[in-house]
Image 1: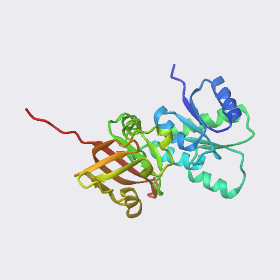
Image 2: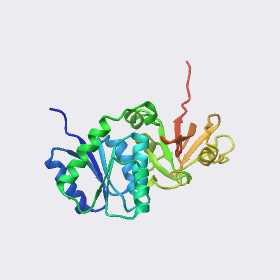
Image 3: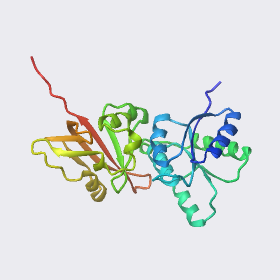
Image 4: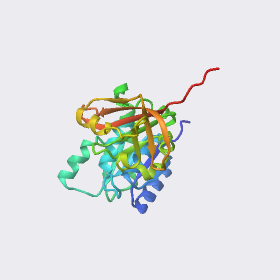
Length: 258
């Protein structure tokens, strides 16, 4: 018997999340997580590796459901179903830009939920996939990597960081999300102590990669200082439009020879 399909629910209404969870569990689905904020959903999706994400359009927090869904699908290629009570055409046009596999309008029934989930999973399984669908590479390897991986929006706010990244910059992931990256860490010249030019802004505006290798150090908000190499580059979506800026930080270790 195949394992139960894994569902992540993103909604800030506890009544709705309980209702959807109950409906889907009765149909044999595994609810692997429930989160209330869009910015948390992007990280949780990478952590939990769901088969499907059910996302409310209007969420509390600094990232709404449409932006969160766009990042989740473009970065990790998890299919999305939207839950919404809106009927405004302009809003619905923005919803479709996130490429959902379905939209369920409130109020809804158990059969509407289960049918939409079944169709989304079936259609996604039949969709041709290519390496271009995964701009960060294998999601599991990226989450387990021993290097800090951070993603920023065009304003330089942190929209994602992997597990090692949270430890490396010495701040809980949920406290770092949607803060400007320079509020969380600082890149400096290791010899002069001078702060380096903003590589995130440069990558976002110039659409080009930036590398800091020699004489580079990172300083955290807790004053921890590490010698590092830093690679920064823009990431594009499947329509070749700007999606995010990727920063990879590796610590340099001093080798000793006998």
